[in-house]
Length: 163
Image (cartoon, rainbow, N blue to C red):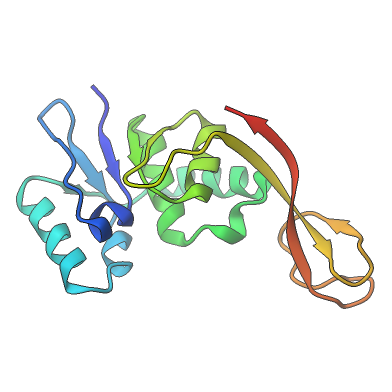
């Protein structure tokens, strides 16, 4: 039975996950730093008291997640916490509970199963690029300003795939 991997949104929304010895709940230490209000911190502590495991992500899997997120153009949309959660889901071949669409987009490409909490699950995956608002040239993700004219770059969907 797979592990359940809990993103910050599980605690922010306060939705407890079902757990059992066959389905442990796992999160990373960085998730706690994203919890700003008392209610979400209390939900986190309650999960810890109920047996949730807190594990740091493995560095080689973090590197793999970063490489994949760079390829899809999602790297700029993911926090270090998001990347760690994805690495933990990959490590345990777990089910990742999240409402974050960028996390779901990257997870889909890596074969990680996701479950939404309150939002609808994504129905399409995207590869993102960057487009200059000045001259209209297109670039890969990672740049913020156009190297040709110096204008701001915005995101655009390079490729869309239905799930």
